[in-house]
Amino acid sequence: MTPAGKIPVEARKTTLQLRLADLKARIAAIEAELESHTSRDWDELAQEREGDEVLEASGSSAKSEIRRIEAALSRIDEGEYGYCVHCGAEIGDDRLDALPFTPFCRACAH
Image (tube, rainbow, N blue to C red; front, side):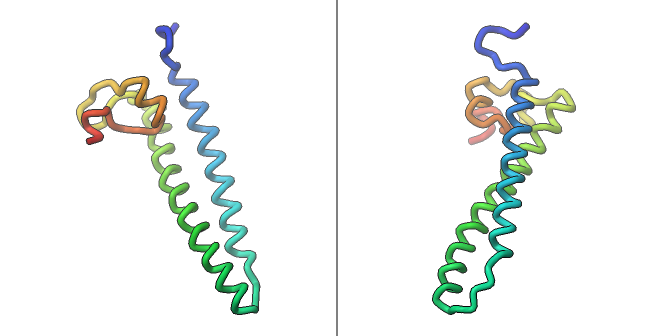
């Protein structure tokens, strides 16, 4: 049984796994979009290139979040989730609610 208001680790794991699946699908869609451009018109090509830069930035951000989520899932599997990797203090539920993949307590994050 968990204290009132405390989210069980398994629930956090499920949330992280769902987010991971969503991000991987987003990256696949971005990669498909980037590969689909075949315009020969210079104006269209320039517009596509501008769009590509936005897609690439979004993909890069998603890949970074994937790495953080995978690390959090590893910490869950190792029984170390919810504890700061720097100082070992318990990470507050409010912080885990906002950043479920965070490896740092509030003090060490600064």
